[in-house]
Amino acid sequence: MTAISMTSMGKNPANGRLESGFAPLVEGNQHGNIAIITGSFGENTNYKAFSKSIIDSTSTGQTPANQGNYIFDEPLGYLPVVYNDSSRGKVLYATQDGSHYDNVIKHHLPTSVPENTWVYWSFYQKTKMQLSGSPYPYYFQRKLGRMNYSDTIIDGQHPEVKYHVNSYAGGQFVDENRIHNAGDDSTRYGDENAIVTSDNVWHMAEIIVFTGTQGVADGRIIIRGKRNGVSAVLKDQKNTIIYKDAQRFSWLLHQEYYGNFGVTADSGPSPSSIELYTDSSAIVIGNKRIDLCDTAATNVCTFRENLWWESWSGDIRAKLSTAGLTSGAHNMKMRVIEGYDTNGWDVVSATQDITVEVA
Image (cartoon, rainbow, N blue to C red):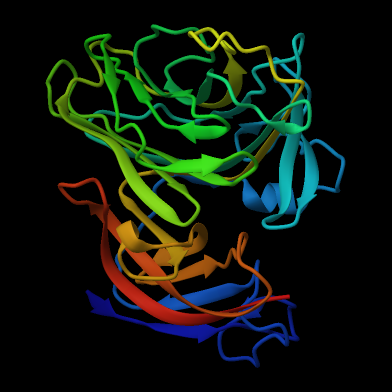
């Protein structure tokens, strides 16, 4: 693992821009500020898209404008609006009821994903699902995200990878992850009970795919989750066909579907209220990215937040995101990630200690 340094940024009074070589900003290493990682990290011009800055720049109660290839105003349910969350700051919020469901936030890639390419997609999600003022205690089904070749949430498309969960445990969410694989149209199940959370708790979902060669079983699908400070690889499907024909991934659909309530033996009623919260979508085409973490190894991190980089050419200029951290100073690590190991965890090529401040 490479040793690297971090340079604080200050404002150049001549042009008002953040640049190295000037006095650091008074607020120091805070949310939205720039930090430079100095090193020989080559060039990384691969496509990336992060929703956090879009959400941060939108007024509370408003729906973000479509930008950066994100589409916020075409849900099947109610329009998402910006909400001030006590933990993560500004996030997206919507409700669901019997006639308004399937809240969908879309991302349309400008170029479809070619063969033999990594796709990384993560987002934070929280649900408050109640029955008469208490956490919903019966069976339900969730669909959280789809990589697809077209703008559709209909099952059985080619290619498609879907993060799909069946949940039940008296108000606890128990993951039974399903992958609908584009290549052979099979359903693959992940690890149940890998991570469990109570109602109204933030959950980080990660969908990572290596597209492989068309018609060849050399692709890979990694599904990960993090809740309550615990990360887990829910599924790591190696040697699988992703592209069986000429169709390619072009759409990432954060679906937010909750349904099939009480359809098992418990025969429970539908929830009386469902609140949906979403934050920090991060999309990277390629296997290189940077994040902020409390430890060097992903499997023991209790805090992880992907970072947008302004530039990646030898040095890396990254925008700090402290969403989810409590007030005060935190000793963290900025991590340079360049791939995935045989167990589905990040390959960290370099780290840099950094103290971030949260107001």
